[in-house]
Length: 426
Image (tube, rainbow, N blue to C red; front, side):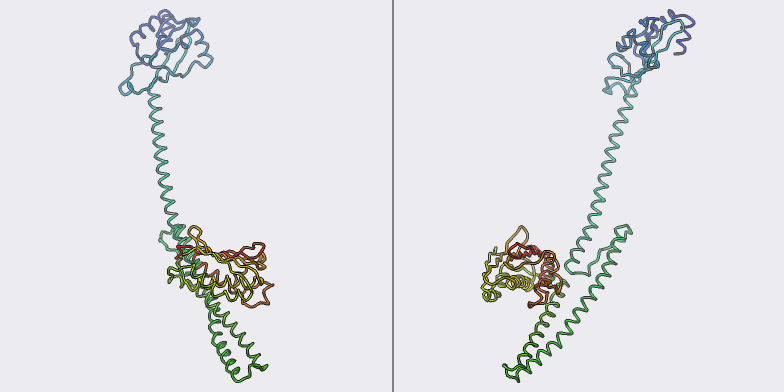
């Protein structure tokens, strides 16, 4: 371009016009397009037909000068008639990037030089395609990595869940398996295992003390009971001494019953019973429990309304299920008023069997609904009645070893007890 400006200064605008005309005719399909304007920005020479109309109008000189003399624009290929190098002929693009440069001439007028650069579109397409593939590859790799990490974490969490389920059933010997990877999960598993070791030691020690006391006291209590019966055999049953001994024998019997309940709960919580579960007709178990307690209800003129879905089969221990059902119904009879009604039903609810016992008794204060499952817990209003506060503790232990649950709810007219046992519980 500087050569052209020097040429114009030496030979004038007329000589430059001849030179531009010859150059345009000789290289009519080149990348460089020249257009020479006079002082009024009218076209004097060049190839204006290879440019957009906006770049051949008299206003183009002022427009380009106002924008700094340079402009980048899209030039349609059908107008530029550019001859492409191999590799650019069939790219499918309709436009090319073009750079327009306007320079004033020493004697007046201006020279417009337009450089067409088709490689820009090719490079832009290549970079765009490369970027798309790169993003797709990164997303695929990231997705696969996320899936792999999720599966790995889920597998490790499932080990913890399986272990926690067994511990919840009373098997405190279970521990989280270690993979010796030394990662954060492995360290967490080590800490949890250490914590479980400590908990097991404390709980086993506490249970052992209770069990030892129960075992040790059963023998002397049994002896006391036997000696009382021996003394009673030598006395008149109407005598004061015999009656006092009978009261003492009753107290010993009550203590023995309490220790038997403690040992039974300890045995349930140990989880040993779960290893011998068999298929049980739960509806038959509940019917047997009601039949056993029917005379007790008759003494208080209580009506037992029953409704059972038959058969309702669960995997469990028949004796434990019978004991739990008996305790629930017996409590309902015990605390219901004379002449009232107790509704007992056993239903299938999807994959769960639900034993529902609804009485018309005084219910349980809302603040004490959870406390009644603790051992030896007695309501203030029940402290003068018989019992030792272990019935519902045993029921809860039975429900949990069968992977079930028990719920107490006041109905306004009495207490609603719901014990749920999964139909497929191991």
